[in-house]
Image 1 (tube, rainbow, N blue to C red):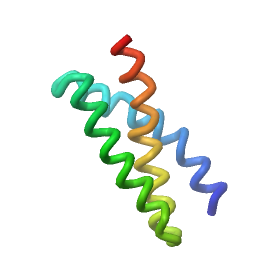
Image 2 (cartoon, one colour; image 1 turned 45 degrees about the vertical axis):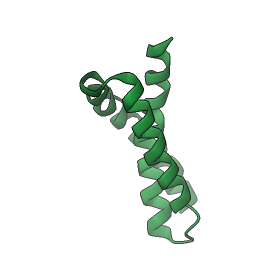
Image 3 (cartoon, rainbow, N blue to C red; image 1 turned 90 degrees about the horizontal axis):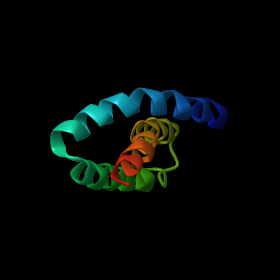
Image 4 (cartoon, rainbow, N blue to C red; image 1 turned 90 degrees about the vertical axis):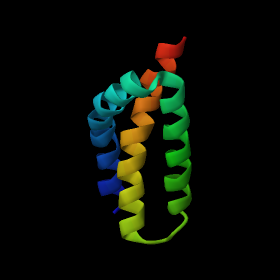
Length: 77
């Protein structure tokens, strides 16, 4: 299961970047970074639940949101 979740991370990172990018165009970079950080915190805590569904769901969410942080932070510099 770890291998399957590991393969999902880069896939959803690529999917999430344009989605979060368009959201940040509407909300602003700083607000989007704050919102993404808060949601990432929640999904990181969900990883503490030792359930396969929770693990895969968190991995997908972390992929979508975590990949977008790279481009959001870079645009602030």
